[in-house]
Amino acid sequence: MRDRDAALIDRFLEMMAAERGAARNTLAAYRRDLEQAAGLVARGLADADTDALRQVMAGYQSLAASSAARKLSALRQFYAFLRDEGERADDPAQALARPATRRPLPRILTHDDVERLFAQAGAEASGAAPPAAAVRMLLLIELLYGSGLRASELVSLPRRAVAGERQYLIIRGKGDKERLAPLSDRARGALDRWLPLVVEGSPWLFPSGKSHISRVRLFQMLRDLAGRAGIDPAAVSPHVLRHAFATHLLEGGADLRALQLMLGHADIATTEIYTHIDSRSGWSNWSTGGIRWRGWTALT
Image 1 (cartoon, rainbow, N blue to C red):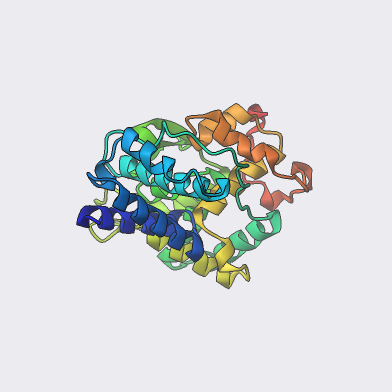
Image 2: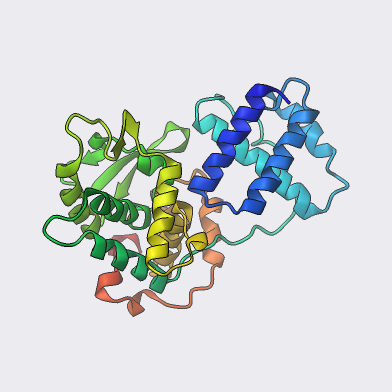
């Protein structure tokens, strides 16, 4: 396997662990799948075209549909990552046919879990002079859960992303497309507390060293917070909070297309996965402290 393929696969798996909270077995399976595919493509996996990938997938016809679907998922996510990272201008895996399998439902947190997470973050950021890291953590989870940002979008937010009177954030998401993400009252309050603590002259909202905090560091901080809140750290990741944002909004009656715009999904079929999640508790059951989207009735 070429050195470039190996390095890019390592970077991709690091992102999957940090942003998606992928389990160890999933990461190991994706590594095997990608390294196997790399060995089947003469020009190297990073530079493969759609025809080469179709030949790779054709070799998996004897496998169970679920196994072939996992291998295709590994390829699709790998090339989407390469495009997002600027390693490729195209995505050769988009045109590959998907095996006929049922898409698994995303993991989500319960309302109680979310409340415990925010209660812990709020307690750590309370007081007259709380640690800057605690104030930052509170704002980070407000934006993950209150605005539904991807981890990569969140950590790389520039200061100028805060628009006008802070009703929205300007987000540059996948495919370099801009969208507006609403800011909840609670997020605006956390933002007002955090901005005076940001290093002067930094172009980033969440600076770290010469750049911004990494997705890996965000993942670590979130799991540490979950542990302190008495929640299984393995059940929490930035992506899981994004899922909770979407699911809990739909439980409250939010419009699917409005949610699609907020999440930055190019295809509404991606958003529709949340309509299959069993809603056991409605919006009316939320306590005042739990409602993080006050004033969003226009979305319903």
